[in-house]
Length: 137
Image 1 (cartoon, rainbow, N blue to C red):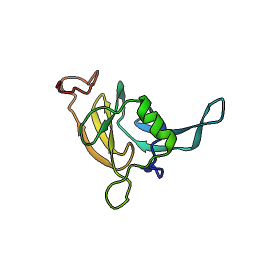
Image 2: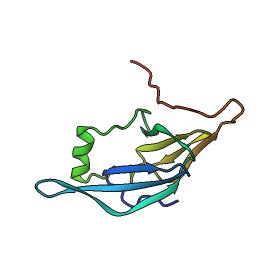
Image 3: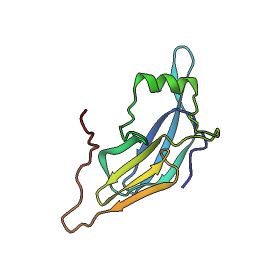
């Protein structure tokens, strides 16, 4: 597994393959008019095999809420902010949860170290869908 060396908030594209190989591409915005490009080589790591459609989630480590692409996060990524913990080290502020037909994997800071995994038995069949459920108010 290869961790992201760039802790800055950036727009990233996560591609997971049926084999379980995942790639993370970092996108940069520049120029006027604005153009988008992929910077550097993609970061690759082993995720969960047979990933389910729409079952890859980026979750906030404190609240458990999904991180979504929104205006505020996009603006912060343009500023090149680096979230840090006390002591100046980059802070793990999110986890990547990838759910597959036979199990799930959780990675720190998108593709850092694997922090959890679960494999479910196939006695009753494989998983067909997954979703994050939030408690209302």
